[in-house]
Each structure stands twice: as C-alpha cells, then as structure tokens.
Image (cartoon, rainbow, N blue to C red; front, side, top):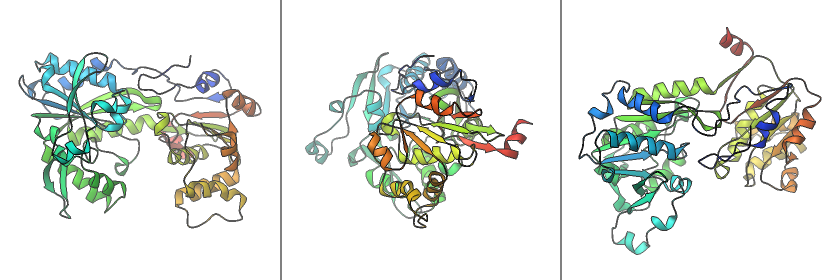
Length: 418
C-alpha cells in the first residue's frame, strides 16, 4: 500500500500504510481504493437503463433536447462521474453541444477550472449579463460549463414563493434546459442531515444565507427544497453512494424521492460501524480534502472515537486541518484547565470538553506544534509516533472518516452481528 494522490485531490495517508498490518490494530474500513472501487461507467449504465420507479433515461431524453447536469458540491470523483454521464447521454443520441454542466464555484475549483474562465466584471453584472457558458477541457473532452454565481440576479429564474412568501429562485440555465439531471451524494445520518443537490446551492446569496442560518424549522426548509425541485421539474435524480475514504460503492437513479431514500439507506449501512468491545486506543481520521476539513469535523470525530474507547484511553485525531479553532471550540479545548465546563457552550462542545478533560487527545494537523499544544492537545507529526504510543495497547482501533461514521457499540453492535 502506498501514499497516492486521489484524482480529486484527496491524499491516502501514510497512516493507513503504517497501521494496516499491525496485529494490535483493527481497521474495519480498510478499503483504500484510489479510484472508484466499482466500474463507474458500467454501474451508471445499469442504473440509468433500469431506474427506480422511472422509465429508462434513454426513453425520457431525446436527440435535440438540451440537458443540464447539476453536480452537488463536494461530490467525490467528480471527473469520473461527469465523464460517465456524458458518455451515456451521447450513446442515447444527445449531442455534446446540447449538454451543459452547471457547478458551484467550489466545485469549479476542485475541477481545476481557473476563475478567469467565469468571473465577470461588476459592470457586466449591472448590465444584466448572465454568467458565461464556456467550453473547458476536463481531460476526457471539452464540455460546456457554467459556474453558478449566487450574486448574479439575471442568472436566476423565479419559480415560486415559499410558505413565508419568500421568492424561490434557481439557476436560469437549469430552468431553461429541457432535461435536468441532478447528481448528488447522501450524507450518513438522519434526514435532517441531508443536503440537496439543487437547492439552495444553485439559488441566490440571500437564500444561501437564510439556509446557513437555519431560519425556520427543518420541515419548512425541506418543504422549500421540494418546492424548488418540483417547480424546476427535477423529478429524476442520480445518487452516488460513497463509503469511507470517498470510495464509490453504488450508484442509484430514478424517481427523486424514492432514490433519495434508497441511497440514504444504503449510505447509512456503509457508514454504520458495529464495535462490541471498547478499545484501549483509537485513531480517528478525517479524510476530506484539506481545505474542506473543519473543527466541526474534529468535534464529531472525537465524539465518535470516545464511544468506542475505554474511559481515559488515548484518542488520536488524524487530519489536515489548517485553520485555528473558533473561539467556542478553543474554549471547549481549554476547559480541561478549569474546574467546570461552561454551560454556555453547545451540547456538542460540552461533550468535547468533557472528553478532552478525561483523557489524552493527540492531534495531527497542519497547525504548528505551539498552536496545538496551546489547546492542550498532544502534537503529532507522523504515524511512527502513533506506533510508539500504541505499543503498550493490545486492542487498538482505526475509524476512517470518523466524523461521518455512525457508531454502534455494546448491545446494538451485538444485535447487528447476530
């Protein structure tokens, strides 16, 4: 096993190579495929030829139709997915010139599209010009692409009003297309943890802000998401089911509501980790792209690791986090030096503070040794340091992408295995 670059920029770390063959380490999610560990082109063709509760895509897309592909932000293996869906559409008689890929600025960055290709002068926006559709070589062929600009009002089309009377806007290229194909990825967890491919990412700045602030109830927000998709005519969807390390395990397609549910169920099965005995030592990884790793991920990974380790057992968080924590997360870390944990912290941060107070926590990141130690965490640089710490422990566990993993312990884990 070697350290290699993931096509989307992800790094398969030295850690897995160092720990994979150690007898005192269990790595239940060891699959470290660099490329999708299924034949993506074949899997996509199979599901598109026989979607769930929907006619074959070849019977609902016809030569001469304009097709807009909407790619969910942060979807893994984006290049592979784009190439596979474009090849399929061409095989059904769709002309390449009639296909437009619509992505967010963050996805454009991950695809290596330079901002100079799509950024507009303020004067052009003021004159009502839409975001440009341009041809870009993605490595397999040139494709028409538009990078969504939430600030460009002309680039949006009004679809409806939500229950509160707020306007529902969606990217105009998606609205104008004869066929919209959303490609999304379910998140492990409950329905309220899911993100939609289309909305609000392909809406306006004000809508993005409103959703980011959690305005209103989850039900009202999801009702608005459904309204946006139905008004757009996005009744069909593709969902990519990924496991730890961004490996693609399955591809689902079909009627939007049905396929979202079936793909989420499949995702939760992959991310459910049953562990009947508590470990003496746990290493929890965060394997998102470095720029996407956050202190929220740190907190969730730490909590997951605490659920499978004995009280006072050491925990290692292995990440590439490069930004210092926000004030409240820092306060949670520093609570170990105080008599009490502040009740003003969120429940999650109170739990984090309690974990750090009760046991040694070591942290591999892109922060300096001084910055890490000022938080009361042990600074790590290499996997060899972990090996040395683990020598005195017989039952060591590695949880990949621990911030996403759904932990089952004790009776729940035993029942899973029965």
